[in-house]
Image 1 (cartoon, rainbow, N blue to C red):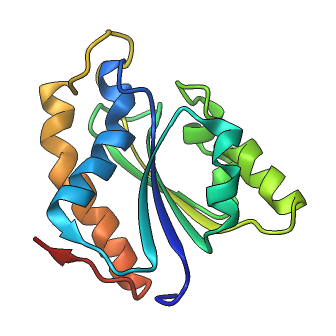
Image 2 (cartoon, one colour; image 1 turned 180 degrees about the vertical axis):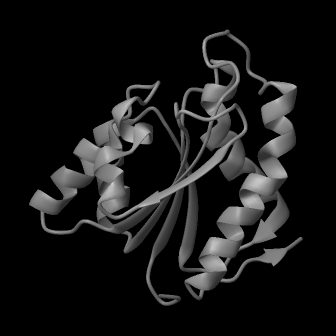
Length: 161
């Protein structure tokens, strides 16, 4: 896995408080870790199909997002494989990025990367604010450590700065 092209993609709308968590997580990973050359970190915002080129260029996709799940705010989710089809992250996405449709389109075009989603249950995703809520902001280091640990299991090591 370590020689494959890896894309860590943070998605969400940073104007809506915790809805921007995925983007803030990518910023945190960029600021606190040094990554191998085959790993790209990207702010995917709410681009949807406009991300297709980047998805087609990667072999392993790690999506960082918010998830409207059944658990309390701050709960961290990890979803992969067939669970992506049923995941709350795609089914109840709070922004216009429909990554499941984009991945399906990539598959039709000849290359669908392996994907895993790390998501967090938001506290407030409706208020207009560039900042995360304090509770969700406090979960950022733990969330990112889980992402780094997952990638280490895949043979992709990041160096803490």
